[in-house]
Image (tube, rainbow, N blue to C red):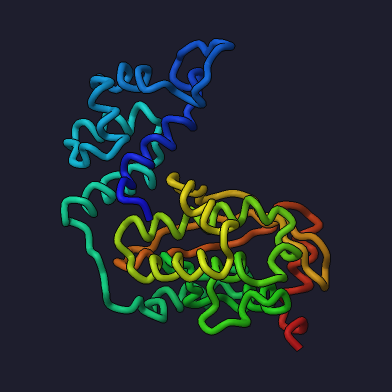
Length: 277
């Protein structure tokens, strides 16, 4: 993890916002992706010099008012706004730099919720990507693919070190980007276990992980669509929702739903009780 996580995040978001999104006209000679520093500084009402110090890590303690102005100017989502404030707290000592092992299970009420979801593929994961619990529907979907072979199962480790991952995920590059970004976000907030996993994957997977980890300052999307290739039913198109649970260990509930009729029919075959035999 780099030492300037706040600056890297702000720059990544600045480069992702198009001039049109903030009412500016983009010219053909623009060499900078997204907004120029001067443009963002003007919109946010701060000096270019101060924005430069923030992005370069020479100032890591912006006031709440400055953060709010930048968040508005960069069109940050709620998740991204929270992440920015927590990055500042990580620098100033207000964030928990936990050294205790992460919990290996979800709360009883969360487990009860998973039980109610039944055949719907859903799981609970922590910041480093360990799978803490899942529904029967997710188990029937993921077990034949090898996602649950390891103990504990870890999504990032599977994506980057298991030879089957590229077959399971036809859009492997996009999945890998998201897993690296999730791991970097957890590491940036002081999760020592995420940091150790990042070191492990840098060795085990080499540049295909480390290059993504170093460049993935922005948060991945919490909703979207994934394509999976299943040996029993063929290609699946799965929409997902990722919901943060009120827990200090960054646990998230991830729910998959069919995005088309073919996937609806395939999941009915995969997740009905008879498919488990």
